[in-house]
Amino acid sequence: MEEAKQQSTCIICEQPKEEGIRIITQFICATCEEEIVHTDVQDEKYPFFIHQLRQLWYRKDA
View 1 (cartoon, one colour):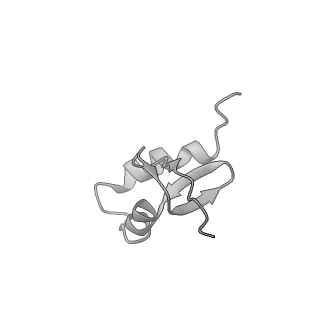
View 2 (cartoon, helix red, strand yellow; view 1 turned 90 degrees about the horizontal axis):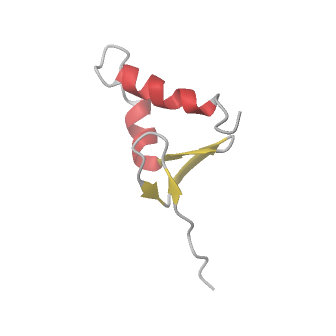
């Protein structure tokens, strides 16, 4: 029996995806995870990733 995959919204690209990682209660899709891992701190996308990843530490209902 094939298990249905659940889509979650990525906190980086904000798109619904099926594959990725869950950190605490947030989801990062596999594509964004790969891009983050290979982004140099000098890259212009680096500050964007840091900004988006801050969502890991802030509760939306607080």
